[in-house]
Length: 365
Image (cartoon, rainbow, N blue to C red; front, side):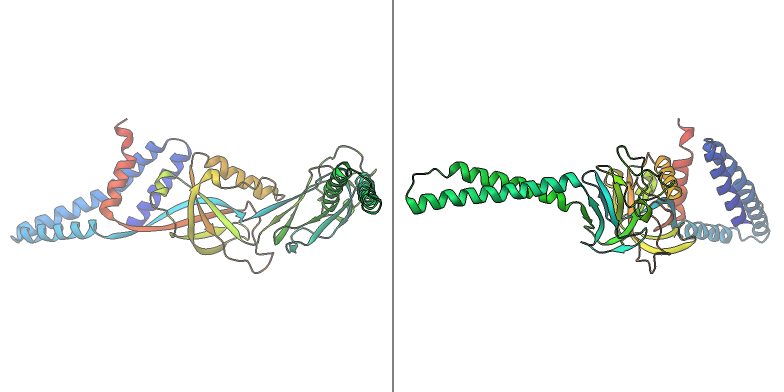
């Protein structure tokens, strides 16, 4: 009976809170608890008092009642705090096209694990290749001119000033090195180890293939080889294997959740997977990145919903997720996660004080 009344009261409070009528739900919950707890206890206490009065043992009843109330007030009750958040990689790398170029080769697919330094895409830019050849030739000619003038000065004793030739050699070498680095950027590699999150091909401006892009096609799709990639286009995202759960905290949760607090997480993807962990840190929301380029639209919108629902929360708990055995078990970035924090136990007296302070505050307004 007691457990059922508590469950009904909690459901009523949550329903009324969703209607922005929280004080009404609290009033209904108080009426239910009063009718299911206080009235039966009052009747039972009255019958005990009459029996004790009849037997001239009222002092024993008062002593037992006092001991019971003291024991009940000091009884430790495990405290649980519930919250929702999302999953995101501990580290990400956006793979961008540094210049407009044609896609010549793609060596990865969505979800593939890659190592740091592994070649991902090979692009081609004819104009850049011609400029590299020209500047390489100009650099060689500048070196040859300087060497020739230096030999004439040393062999024949001519009074020749090498300063302009040295300056020309340095300038052409700098231009050549810059163009060489720009050309090397056409060979796009991974800077961090992790797995590939493919990105959707946008409606690129400028020249492209004559056929149309397949709806929701990604740059990792072999059919996109030969398409012109716009400058700055996001080709893929490399996500580290290490995952973090980001759990926004309310002010009340922040008072009991700290680094080291035990937490139980239920990840929505894969469905129903429950993991145990500890809070690694509590940070400000501004320090937490938001993976807005996820290609999993359902996960992205779920994360966006949590973001908007918890926009007033200034802090978030960071929980390190365990390593997943296979890509099928690994959750997508943005997948929702439900958290249960195991806060330090509180006594019944402290819980009652907190409840009265919080839920009866509207009477003072």
